[in-house]
Image (cartoon, rainbow, N blue to C red; front, side):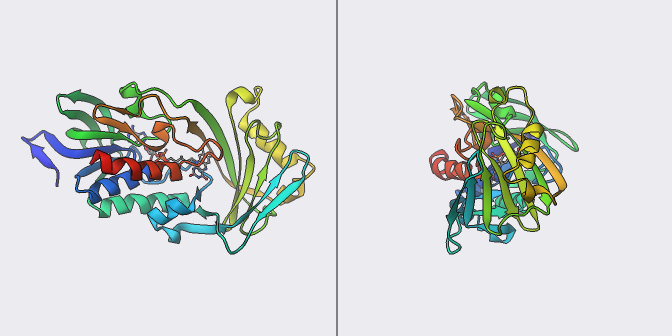
Amino acid sequence: MPVRKGVETIDYDVVVVGAGPVGGFLARRMCEGGANVLLLEEHSQIGRPFQCAGLVNPDAMRLAGLEGTVLTPIWGARIHSPSGIPVVIGNEQQVRTWSVCRKLFDEGVVSQGVDAGADLWLSSKPESADIVEDRVHLSVRTPTGIESIRCKLLCGADGAHSWVRRRFRMGRPRELMVGFQVEVTGYKGEEGRLDMYTGSTISPGFFAWAIPSGDTTRIGTWSKPDLMGGDSCEQLLDRLRAEPNWKDRFSGCEEVGRFCGPIPCGLVRKPMSERVVLFGDAAGLCKPTTGGGIGPGFKQVELLVPILL
Ligand SMILES: Cc1cc2nc3c(=O)[nH]c(=O)nc-3n(C[C@H](O)[C@H](O)[C@H](O)COP(=O)(O)OP(=O)(O)OC[C@H]3O[C@@H](n4cnc5c(N)ncnc54)[C@H](O)[C@@H]3O)c2cc1C
């Protein structure tokens, strides 16, 4: 249990800023190692807003054990060249990745942190943080006012635009890609196989995707602003859907949602500074070949927590 010092300061071993998947998993592992942990989330609910294609790799799924959040097991892919030639891979017996409901997945991971003992404060975020001798002092805005917190370790798991990273001047991810995605019904794909589309007019330097996710399909593209020649992500996605080689697959699609978000790649210069450590997207840990951030973030937690404890 946290210790209140006098009336105004609450002591924790670890404060984790950001209750995304990486923050939730980090809180769980810290609690399992005996630390008392406060998890801060600026939103009023976990898993919203949502900026993800929802693929969780088998290693990360094993660590989370949240198979109940799976919408479609993905065992294969059709990878399309810019001229439309497909390379078809996969074997139904071997699941390569899981397409999950990201809201349920995030809620599940954060609940595991809470079940392990972490305190979760929603609608709460730090307004200031300073290292004073052997503690980090935080001022946290909560729905009921400002709370004064003291901890031994401050963890920034607060995403691509991390407040913790900026507050402690810990550098920037080497690259910042941008991803844009629509969720549709009526896409003509293959159950269990995702489609990858390549070509400089639809996803310069990277690829576009159509990922089966239960009753819907997530269709998206990602690139870097300096490769996009002034085009917007929406224009890239419109071109993907109009491309003669595969436009029939998109003809019956109805959009039920759209999402846009940053994908930070390339570890920041100082992921750890005195009593402050960055995790996941905040540290710039997305996988540069796929944009996946959940697996690398979980791995970072597994590697670092025993040392930090
Ligand atoms: C279009 C797109 C598709 C993607 N597809 C995939 C995919 O299929 N698979 C995959 O693994 N990755 C994917 N990613 C990347 C993935 O979404 C991230 O890597 C992953 O969410 C990182 O988790 P995180 O916990 O580090 O950060 P986040 O998920 O960003 O969580 C950070 C949390 O911190 C909170 N927060 C932020 N600032 C504060 C603050 N000051 N105080 C309190 N709380 C704060 C936020 O509200 C959020 O809840 C995709 C990204 C995009 C943009």
